[in-house]
Amino acid sequence: MPLAKRMRRYMQIKNLSAQEVAEKCGIPLSELQNFLDGIGAIDSMHFETLNSIWPELVAYTFNVDASVCTDFPITKH
Image (cartoon, rainbow, N blue to C red; front, side, top):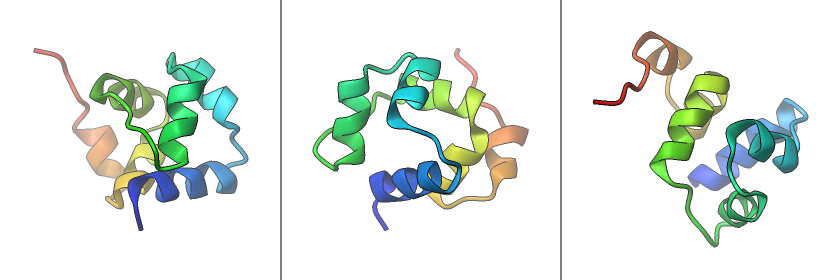
């Protein structure tokens, strides 16, 4: 399943709106919506922010165990 579909599915399961995710993560709503619709991309910086707020969302999106996103947080060098 494509990343965008997995992310959309997680958001549906957790009853998260695109607007809520965009606002909390500082992602322009249009950019997030384009990604979820499969016609755009999300900058890696936004995935880092998503991981710090919703590591389970990132884990589900990439189909990895959530511990990968929480035990090994992304750090800036």
